[in-house]
Length: 120
Image (tube, rainbow, N blue to C red):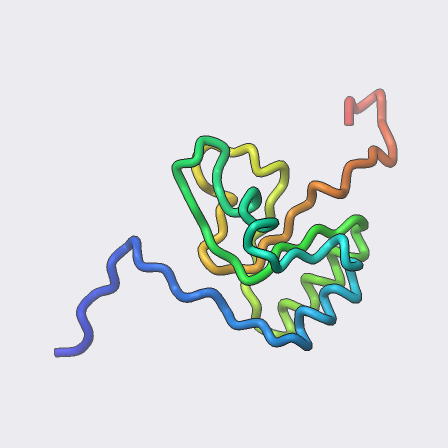
């Protein structure tokens, strides 16, 4: 008959990231931009209300658009799933990782240009 259907709340285990992969990410974003310590990762793995708790093998905090692009290219080449995270202020758990690499954009905090006519 085949396998029973998967429950909707089943989550795949987090990908196992090699030391080489983590090293390459760290080379891209610097030591301040790659977090592997569970205690340091905790704020990036829960929603604002504390209703959802996630898990991830790595939290990456790039500081430039080039770093973002380089990390995404590396993840694509290695088939590592990514959850992008802005301010992690959502109230519905949408940015809480369920095993994916967390790409937190909190270090990208500079306004590079304003267009007053378009209000952008």
